Length: 42
Image (cartoon, rainbow, N blue to C red; front, top):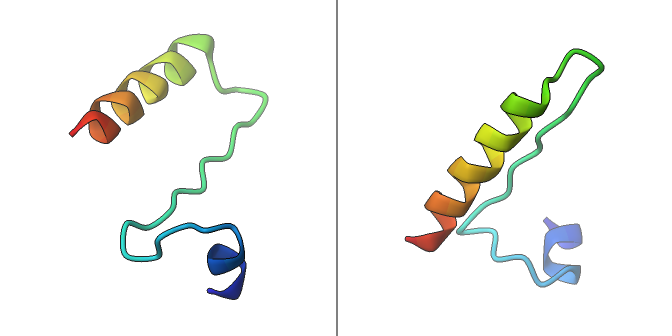
């Protein structure tokens, strides 16, 4: 919690830890980015 506060991250909105591994495809990364953009847009 202190780390989030030090980084000025609102803990109410939350965070996401999204690991990528050697088998993650470019299509999966693109789908994730699109989903995050849509979510953050409202």
